[in-house]
Image 1 (cartoon, rainbow, N blue to C red):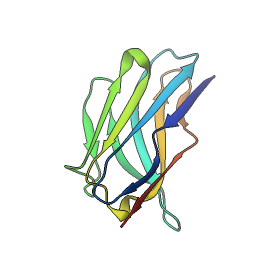
Image 2: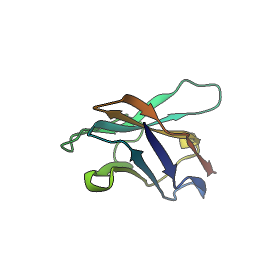
Image 3: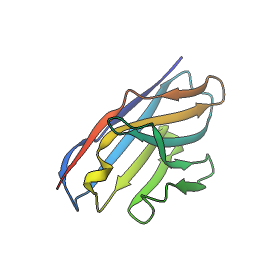
Image 4: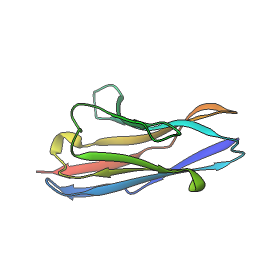
Length: 116
């Protein structure tokens, strides 16, 4: 089995920055795409950013130019650098990874709160 553990969430003022990390552990053979999703209260979970195993990236329009996704394949870790944060970025952020052997898995989520 595999596990995803997220870290880096917290409380920040508008205009500030945070960096989220998500590390996979367990019986990992290979990881295909990895991504970050978020879910605000009363809203559906939405894709924030995704990155393939070879580094191709995609972003939600609402975060383009402010967020950057990256990954370290040697460490089985994906990062989300979030700059110029806005109150509307407040949500629980979830890591997702598509394992070659195990299929898609989710992390437990980390809270990001941006105060105005």
